Length: 289
Image (cartoon, one colour):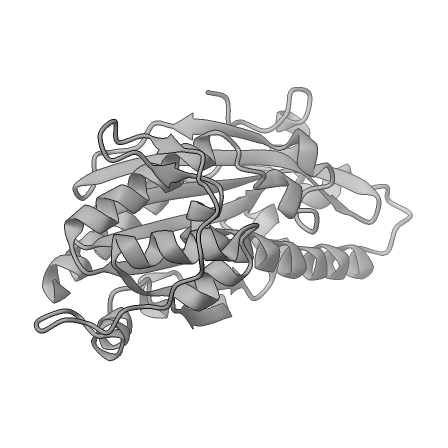
């Protein structure tokens, strides 16, 4: 697959930086501020989509025999069952998720927390097209709790000019057992691969969400299962468009399925950067589960 910046732009961008492409009569401070604001809003939207992937049962369910997603049918809303003896409680899962995530100390200096929230099954399914179906799926799969933690560069414009990630994020979901985590991994990766309407919900990050291209990315075998995708399109600052790409990796290790990734403007995502974070996440999963 092709993740490089668009044809005709590489030399100009690499030699002069992001702002070398802008008309000289524009105010540079305003341009930088515009890109910083737009990226903060847009990346927050992307993080919201990652969190919404938790409720993918609203788009597809799992066929127990074939192991492939199928179209769900309407189902009555259910509430999470009380954990059985020996089952992981929501409080215990929350405690583990305090450590099983990407921490600020894992990143280079210059990143700040953009979003940090926990979501139980009711919260995760609420924004889905059919919350009842999504909630039933998550409860049946044994999902206990999830946490989305995203960081953004304090100076997103400078990060873009330097060819660095403007955002790094993780979304970690804890299940009662590996079977439920594997089931969720299968559903979520297929829905991402098929697009699942992700681009249409990223209007603040991409100029034309319908034109967002989702493609598989070569990614190392990490955890029990792993798969990665790129979401590539165009973003805008002061009327000038630039290529932007989000790299999204999905990993499953034991009773945990997690998303980890980054967003870059102009330059291609650093796969090794995300692989390193994914390996670190697996180490922490092994230490807690």
